[in-house]
Amino acid sequence: MIKYYNRKNKTYEIEKVAGEKVLEWAYTSPIGMKLLEAVIKKKMASSLYGWYLDRGISKKKVNPFIRNFNIDMSITEKEIKDYLSFNDFFYRKLKPSARTIAADPTSLISLGDGRVFAYENIDLDRLVQVKGFTYSLRELIKNDPIAEKYSKGTCLILRLCPTDYHRFHFIDSGICEATTKIKGAYYSVNPVALQKVQKLFCENKREWSIFHSDHFGDVLYIEVGATCVGSIIQTYAPQKRVNRGDEKGYFKYGGSTVILFFEPNKVKIDDDIAEQTQLGYESYVLLGEKIGVKKGGLNMEN
Image (cartoon, rainbow, N blue to C red; front, side, top):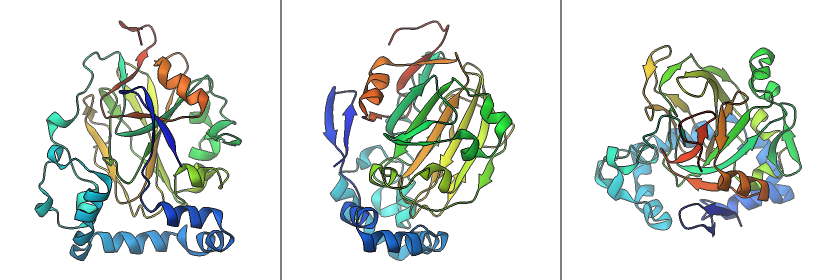
C-alpha cells in the first residue's frame, strides 16, 4: 500500500497501482526476485513489451486501462478512437487548457504530473532513495565536476506512475544542453522496488542534461527509465531557447522518474512538500503547479 499527500485536499490517499500484484510478487517473493534478475530487469524484456505496445493490436488495452484507473479523457488532445496503439495513448498530449502554468517567473513549478519528494541542503554521497537506502550523484551521472556544483543544493524527485500524464517539461525559460545517455537496467521505480534494490536509480537506464535557466541557475535534469519503458524520448532542441512550460520529452510505457538538482541558494521548496518529505510521504502535484520559489525572488511566501 502506497500512501501519498494530496496538496489540494490536504489529505492522504492510497495510490492505485497498475500491476500491483505482479509488482509485489516480483520484488518480494524468492522466485519473483530470481525472475526479476534473470529476465524482468533486462533491456530485452522491456524492449519486447514496448514493441508490442507500439503495435496496433495493443489498442485493445486502452479502454480497460481508462476504466480501471479513471483516466480523464476530456483533457486529452485526441479522442479514444484516434489512438493508434497503447503507447500512442500512454504518452498522450493534453489540451493547452488542461494545466495552468503558474504566472510568476520566480515561482518554481512542477515539471510534470506525479508524486514528488524534495530534499534541501543535500549530501552528494548520501542522497535519499527511500528511508535507509542512499546513493551518490557522482555515481548517478558519472561526472564528478558537474556533480560537485550541486553539493548542499536541492534535489526534487518526481515519480510518474503508469496512470499519470507521461510528458515532462521545462520549469523555466532558458537553454538546455545536449543529453548524455547512460545504459542500465530496467527495475521498477515504484516504492516497493525502491525498498528492495539498493542504488536503484544508479542501476537503471538514465539520461541527463544541464538546463541553463533564466531564474534558477544551472538545473540538472535526470530522466530515469524503468520496467517496460522502452524509450526515453527527448523532444527539445539542444542549445535553443525554450519557454517556461515547454515540453522537454516523454516516456513510453511504464512508471518513470525525473530528478532535478539545483545549485545551493537557488530555490526554497514550499513548506508542505518539505514537511511531507520529512514524514516520508510524496506529495501529488500537476504540471505547472507552484512547488517553491526562487531564493531572493519577488514572492517568498508559500
